[in-house]
Image (tube, rainbow, N blue to C red; front, side, top):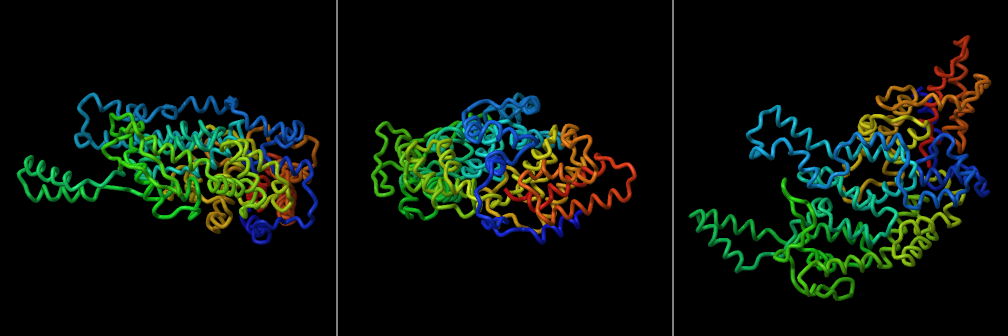
Length: 546
């Protein structure tokens, strides 16, 4: 079967932005429903195209962009089994170290078996969060919310690769920064991310501070010499203290990745000024710490800051008001509106962001103070969003492919860890992107032959029921009419999995598999042939597009 998939791929991978359709005719109603679900629902589930057609595009969008709780009983029941996804960082720390804190915990005193158990407990909050992300994307009836969470999770990226205490912080970051604000305002999400321990840790702002003065260095030398009696140790402590100081890492990414965009109206002086304004922004860390935001005046570079041609006064009360004022200014800046509009247009419409979509998104951003649903509505309202050239013009990331394959088959997911492993093998492990840019969402980043082979194998394994904890239910196969002739099974299944239609090579591959099977089988069985056909459909070039 993989040979058939490969032959279809070699002939049908389209140029991005140049749809396989030659006619410039507008999308019909069914194509519009498919297009909307591809961009804002990780693709159609069985029967979902018909649901959108029945209720209408506008009503579906209103339902999805109005804040509400997920209702899918399978999802809610599965999430109940996780112990840590709703814990604060302090709660997660207490959960991890519960068996050790009461006995004067020292990791060096643990046996090898105890150390192994502790390592497993440390990994548990992260592993449960990653499974919850995958389960919500596959099972939640809040389709658009999960798609937008994926976008903002990348935009305000933090990663478990940072190590250390971030393993206790990202669960809370996902809940309090991303999910709480995904249908709210950009400014609130920006401020929440800037004050969260996970971001302060990931981009090193927690250790950013004003450089010590000569007097402070002299005091350190005197105190160390008095305490240790060693001049060498005192000089070593002075050297360490002197190297501590301003860290520009977060300030640079805040301007470049989170708000204005690369080299978009700021210079190095602005980066330094912003880094100075954010000195003292740290958190209460450690095993017994709350991991909540703390402003440390003694770490702060005091004084007015000049940023983007404007002067921001120091906080009269000695707090972090100056930094908050700068964040608010960045959140409402025209360049931020344009940058966010460009990224959302690229994510939802085409790798080459259509200028009219970017303009519409930026205008909505400025008009509504960065209201995220309003910006999404403005994008969907453009003619370009529905243009034929943007239909099936994007290429799915591994995450989008895996989630859409599970959704397209209506598969029941009771164990997400095999899907975690699949995404890792495809080079997109969830919440493990070390680069602050997050995972790329354009085709060129994912058109790797080795990873494509893994997609083909996953498609076959899913269809054949070989993925532990993930099963295509009987209800999926019952969508093929009982009186349908075996020769037509391929057409019924193609309509379910590829509601936008299969290409010529894919149809030929389906016909070849069907003919070969029927030539050998006197009594055809849909449960035997069907998985082979579904594997072809999920691995087809058409299914990789959205």
